[in-house]
Length: 401
Image 1 (tube, one colour):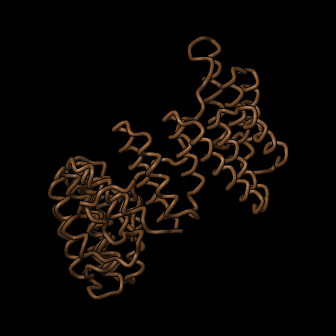
Image 2 (tube, rainbow, N blue to C red):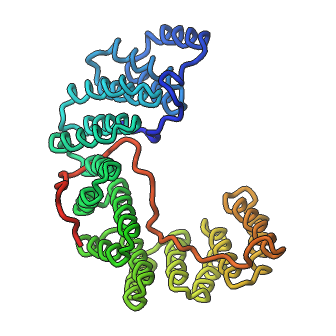
Image 3 (tube, rainbow, N blue to C red):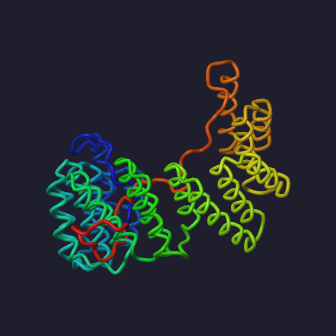
C-alpha cells in the first residue's frame, strides 16, 4: 500500500482530532461496522485516509487489527495505521507501528521497505536528520525488497538525508546508484528523473555546468534506449549551450529531434502525432528557432482540428508570437482558445495570459516573454511512501563522471 501525501499539515499531535460529539459518532459507527468483512473495513479505512478523516482511519485500522489479527489484510492495516499516526503528527506511535510491521513482515518485503521509509519520514519531520540517516544506512543492507523501484525510492530519501547532514558527495554517489539499473516502469523512470534533477542541481549549485551535462551523458551511455532519451538529450543540449559549447549542445538537440522523428513515423492517430510534434516544436524553441516552432504548431492546429492537444498548440503558438513582440496575434489566439474550449484548463490559462499581455501593452509588464528556460526534465516531489529500491549504492563511492 502506498499513499500519495506524506506531509502532515497540522502542527501538533492530535490536531486531527474531531469534536467530542463527532468522536462519539465515529465510535458508534465503528460498533455498527462489526458485521463487515476485513476487506470492507480496509476499503473504508483507505477512503477515510484519502479524504483526510485521519481519526476515522485510525479507528477503522485498529478495528481491523482487533477483529482480524491474523487476516490477510493485517500488514496493510498496520501500514495504514502507521501512516495515519504520521499524518496526525503522532510520530512516536507512527515509528512504533512501522517498526512492528517490519518485524512482522520481515525485512525483505516491499511493505517493510515502505514502513522503513515511513520511519525515516517521521524522524525527518522532527528534524532528527542525523538519527534518520543513521537508521537509513543501518537498514539499507537488510531491506532487500524485490522491487527495484521501491528500493530506489528508499535511496532517494537517503540521499535527501545525506544533504541534510552535509554529506553532499555521498548523496551524489547514492543518486548515481539509482541511475545504474535499467528500468521501463513509470515509477522507475520517475525515480531516475528525480535522481537526475538532483544531480544536475548539485552541479549547478557548485557552478559546474559541464559536470551536470557530463553526468547526464553518462546516463545515456548506460541506457541508450531509455524512454527518457528525448528529455535527457534536450537537457544535455541546454546545459552545453549554457556552458558556451553551442556546437556540442546542438548535437544533442539533433539526437533528440532524430528520436522524435522516429517516434512520429510510428505514431498512430492525431493525439500521438500531435504529442510528438509538440516535442519537436519544443526542441526548436530550445534552439531559439522560433519560426520553425511556429510552423510545427500551425501544422498541429490545422491538421488535427479535433485533436486533444490543439488548444495547447494554440497557446504555445500565441506565446511564440508574443515572444517576437506580436501581441495582437497572441491575443487573438488566446481569445480563440477561450471561446472554442471555454471549460478547459487551456481556456483558463489563455484568459490569464490575455490579461498579462494586455498589461504588458499598457506598460505594466515587459512587452515580451522569455522562452521556456526550464528543460523538459522537470523536478517532481519524491513519491510519498517508497515503492521500489535496488542494491544500495556504496555511500562512500566516488561520483561517476
